Image (cartoon, rainbow, N blue to C red; front, side, top):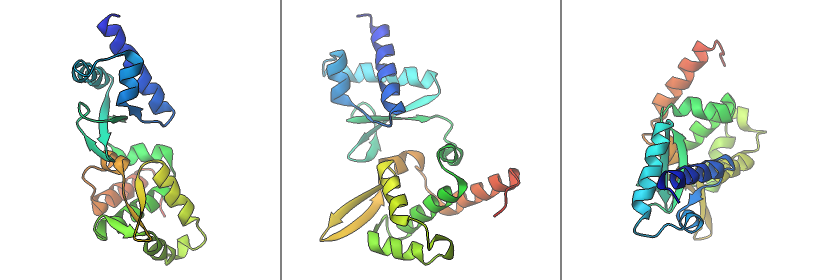
Length: 191
């Protein structure tokens, strides 16, 4: 098979996986397109270059942490513009975005992890969140790859997952809230 055609098919394969919300896995790509271990790094490099031409970045993740796509076991796509706040607003409404930022901020200030019961207790102290399904929202964030929930010594611990690191590489709660506020003023929506 022509190398350029193979690269195009791999690009299509990764895009299709991304559209389904599934991370592309290295071994699946290798077996599907019969790529040897020695050829894989150069092939995935060409795939990443093709995505760059399209304005998309191929992000490699391994053990829930972003890393070089050459060594990664799984892949995810993000737009190159790095306007993470606007990208997230497409998926969720402003209230949920603010709640996400609040959850990230709590985890951030607690040292990058917090007990699940403590997180729920802190959030439920807010008058606006008293009747909100906080556990469901946290589980949705886990399902989307923003949070990781693990059981350590009979306690559930919430920490950041791979998608948080991809979309918020230099997380700064104050800067992000300022961006949201500026965007609200620009769109004439005040809370």
